Image (cartoon, rainbow, N blue to C red; front, top):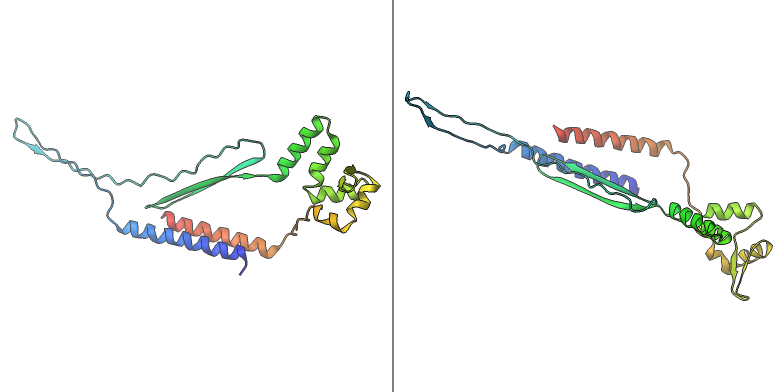
Length: 199
């Protein structure tokens, strides 16, 4: 079972549990407020008033997460049934955005080679692009204690002990129709379960 399918099954079971809880809550007695007032008027008539108020529990509101920097974004969500509500959220860092911002600041301070190295050593796409353009990323030579660029850097990167410093390649997947239909089906199932939960 794939991780995605396992997570979808767990999410479906959680929604189903909320659905079951909501049905048990519907079977329970509603919140009733009764008020009786008796008044006597000189004409000796008595009136009695009874009012019944049925209210829902307070809503679960998703927390608003603002980003402290340009390279973080907030993710939040909430689920509410007629009995219980749950909400949560967190901030997520965008590492690529941070690297670009660091590189831009270094470049603005006149440190052009350092700006390139920030991107080279953190993103394999930049590393490969620089290599294919004939201007490989710089590397620090341990024996002499100096930074190498150009053909010297190419020779140094070819050494086996320096391969560990090359950023790893990310696996970008092509469009998979099976994966797409799995996501659509899971989404439709989730909407149907939530609609049943809302009744």
